[in-house]
Amino acid sequence: MFRDKVDFSLLDIRTDAESLIVAVSSQNSVHIPLEKLFTKTNLDRLPTDKPVIIICHSGTRATMAAVGLKQLGFKNIQVLKGGIVGLAQEDTPKNAPMK
Image 1 (tube, one colour):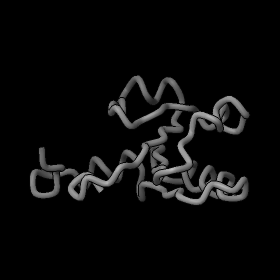
Image 2 (image 1 turned 120 degrees about the vertical axis):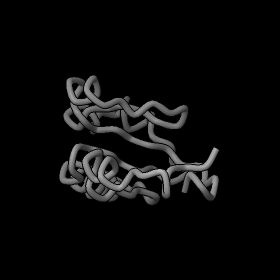
Image 3 (image 1 turned 45 degrees about the vertical axis):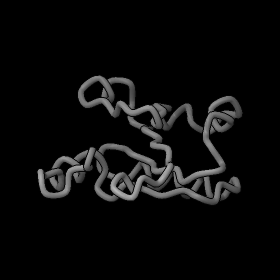
Image 4 (image 1 turned 180 degrees about the horizontal axis):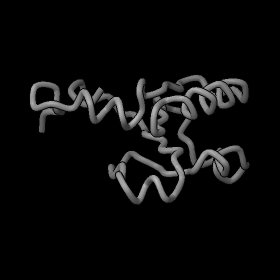
C-alpha cells in the first residue's frame, strides 16, 4: 500500500507502554489502546472512507478488534499479519517503502 500510494489509516491498538517502546509515527496513524477503542468518541476517530489497518504486537488483538469493528459496520478493516513483530522480521532494504 505504501508503494502503491494507497490512502489508508494505521490504527495502533497496543497499550501506551507498548507504544513507548516502538512507536508507529505517521501522519495517517492513530493510537487507541484496545481497551479504549469501543467508545463512541474513539470509534468516531476512525475513517470510513479509506482502509484501516490495525496493528498490535503479534496480530492477535488486532484480529479481535477487526472482528468487533466489522460487526459494528466498518467495511474497510484489515489486520497487519504478525503485528509489529512480523513487520520487524520482514522489514528489509528490499521491501522497505520507496520515498
